[in-house]
Length: 499
Image (tube, rainbow, N blue to C red):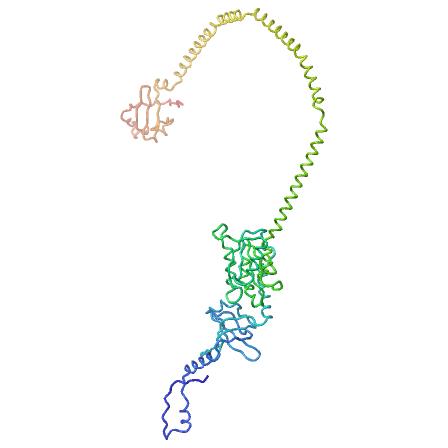
């Protein structure tokens, strides 16, 4: 496509203009930005979207902005490539160093480097070898996490009440599953329609699996007892949605047992490793989900017949055993003859025994009557009253004597107590000295330390203030406190302790 220059005003030529100047003046004048924009429009209009095959080179992961920058190269050339942040998250195949891919995008230029590049919209491995290498690498990565471990497998319920199916609502797969379920054992089926290939298919399948597992038991929408994830045959590219990590993780997180039926028997996808059972075909998945109803009915009828025959044989055997026991039993008359004879003998001995017993009781009663007549209760009672009258005065005499003796002893103790009481000592002229708390004081030194003294006489008490007994130096004693009569101390005798 020809480049269209911007409108320019041709410079005026004069006779003085050199020839080279005349030639340069005929060429249009461009700015760098105008030329870059013109080249960009020309390149985009000429190529538009292209499908480019090449090997990824120089990929170092997403940039800080979230965009990815790398190159696509083959044996002869190299082109810069960019994947914007929003597109990178939707790519089925993420960029990886050295991976050969088929990239679809728009050819454009980058004026800042004066280079052209491809803005990638989608990307997938190039060739069956690349797909298989990527599949094997992803399988090893998920297996290392334990998602394919045998102990994670759950048993398929023998007869599910509700079956959930994740597949395309159109096509032969869903019809084959429903037809086989109808033939074997009709069960309610919930279908979650999804795309099974192409852009966004993996996300829809993962959402469907998680959606079935999120249903609450006993809710308005019945929760399936088993899930079938199915798709018909196809190339590895067609089945790639079932190799996506999102689908594998959704299947491993679920609690509902899952049967995978993707492709034909020879096709293998990663969901087959994480599922609880793998079916060779969608029809085979329906056969794994439910038993054959007719076979169950036949088995029930067979078990019922066998049970009835067993019961009849048991009844007949018990009847024969009963007959044998009846024949072995003795004749009733012969069995009871000995019992009857023992009863007759006991009856014959009963009358004499009763008569002898009555005779023994009469003789015993007669002996008791004689004893009672010889020792009358009235005579015994009169004797007891006489003895009681004779001993009746003895306790009163003894009590009087004991009381008098204890009274004399009490009088003697009272006299002794009066003689020993401190009051009798006070009556002889002594004084009991106490402090304010009523504690007796035994020495003058202790009494001198008290603030007030209580003096107990025989006929009353006084309060005094203590003072020392020394003179003023002139040979005279100090005056006694008010209310207390001074006494001259005895020169030779000291009052001893009363306690």
